[in-house]
Image (cartoon, rainbow, N blue to C red; front, side, top):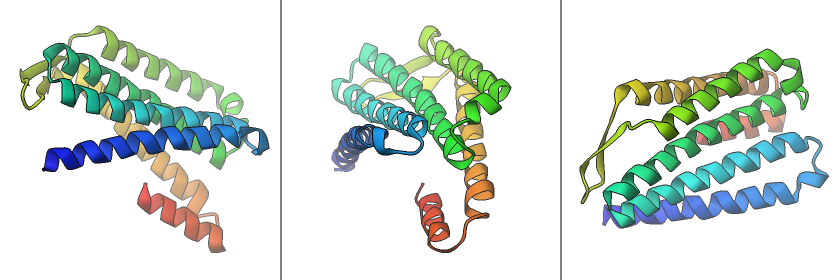
Length: 183
């Protein structure tokens, strides 16, 4: 029963992320900051790909499928977090954030590329039980992934609070606090 509920929520997440990205891209021409809409849409698509890959490897239950779709899901998380981080930085600072913080952006892009290449080309997933899709990860490859995702999330949370919530007032502040708590 829990497994069916998990599939339903993953399917809903996938559909909503693809719909959200479509709606964001549809509004791109009307927005003041189209660059942030593009990154937001790409981040939503990657989160949808993560949900889809999770559903696929859970349903197929073959060793090759578990390894392939788990890798696709982890790569989608890295790229989705990267895009959502850029969205937050552009919305908080300005659309010129990438050109102003060029060194930081290049460092982040290189780090994201290295972690993505590690996830693609290394053999770090060991399938323990095919029936339950239980896996074990090589910590030398998995820990950089976890640290990268954690640092990006922590820095994004700090940026939202410090540059967004703390400096806003009124209804805008209430909406930001709600968004902050929901995310």
